Length: 117
Image (cartoon, rainbow, N blue to C red; front, side):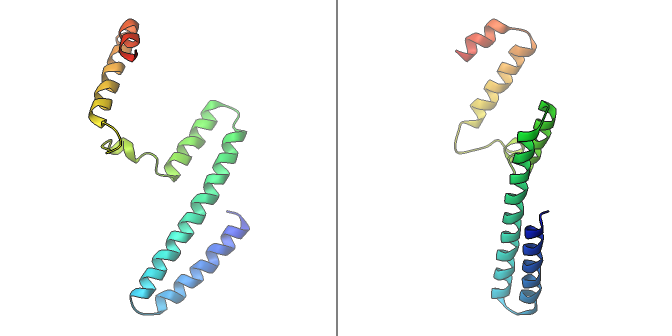
């Protein structure tokens, strides 16, 4: 973690401790805002570092490992646990995915091409 981020986190942690000492709903709201801000700064900083590492990756395996960490950082894997969405027909998409995968495993190249057209 860079020194600037570390210092910023230390200052915000101190602010959180001071907020905890106060009473009432305002202190809870301030604490939530500070925690959100710390998390956002961390994610942005870590994301920047990971993108730099991706540019410097020598092999695809290195690049892929960094890309997966970046996806995890930005919670891009949630759709795999629950594919339902109002943005697309997930049932039809899942059916088509399974059908294409079956054709591929059976070696039915012409069927794949026909389906994709």
